[in-house]
Amino acid sequence: MKRYLDFNATCPPVEAALDAVAQAATEAPGNPSSLHWAGRAARRIVDDARDKLAKFVGCESGSVVFTSGGTEADNIAIHSVLASAQSGRVVCTAIEHPAVLRPLQHKTEQGLDVVFVRPDKNGIVTAGNMIAAINDDTLLVCMMLVNNESGAIQPVHEVAEYCRNHGIPILVDAVQALGKVPVNFQQLDVDFMSLSAHKIGGIKGVGALLVRRGIKLLELTPGGGQERGRRSGTENVPGIAAFAAALGEIDFSSFAAMRDAFEEQLKIQIPEARIISEHASRVTNTSLIILPGMDGETLLMQLDLAGFAVASGSACSSGKREPSHVLMSMGMNESMARSSIRISFGPGNSIEDAKALVAALVNSRNRLKGMAGLAV
Image (cartoon, rainbow, N blue to C red):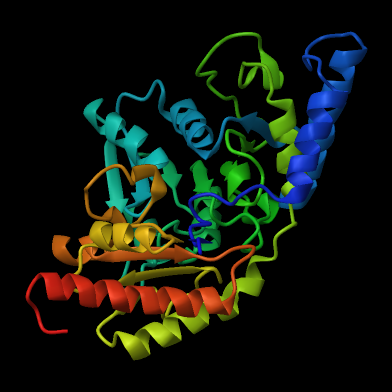
């Protein structure tokens, strides 16, 4: 029996999204920039989806820029603010997604001072530490709303309020937050927010950047001037339609019982197991665990053979053998960081799946210890 428990990496498309794809592809086959009836039909789908997304996340329709995903959205925001900067500071959490960390690391090579603020032992980057790192030379602040590995909810509101009072742009990566916690662009009062469709049951290859009114974006790939000249390229009409259709379709709060049952059984069956951010505010579907002495990649392969799909950190970095930068930033050594497994529950999962995963972890742990000649 195969069990998918990696919904933070991607959420399989919900039925409403698949229906929207089929409808858009068959009933609106035109290019949304074309003036004929087929183009106008496609344009209506894009405009309606923009309006629906804007309402869902509390922003103006004109603030929505459709992109290929969260990575592109983050990059557009970062490069728009920093493209011409020769000096200055960027303040960023050390637990950001690589879509934020990598472009900022490139900026350090260009002479910018990038300060990476570490989280506390619960995986929270405190508002006080973020604010303390901001100085008069700060050009941009980057702070995710929900961490993709631990599920820990970050205190973005306090930092955003400080940035607004001091006129400093702030980018909020809300890719893992959308659908799991309230996301309201206007209430957070930020300058940029990145979103991704496939995390909530849309399809892959579609995302959005929300932009405060009046901010000019750098067009990274100049072309036909789509998205009001902010992001050229023919819009992915079926994908955009699916994004809008998926909004609100999944009640992620319903997975709390599964996650709690998994963690409860895990602590009984493997007492040395450690649950990251256990005592912090977390989204209800995510559990990041450490099994001391076990290699996370090896455990992942063992679980895969047993039919379980889980992750060893961020799926966007899963092809690499580096330890979790999130756990390393929390002060853990490399061995501990490598022994992590992320479980993220979603539609179709049950408490039975949670309990079966614990049993599989116990079996894999005992097998690996036996192979190493260690006492079980």
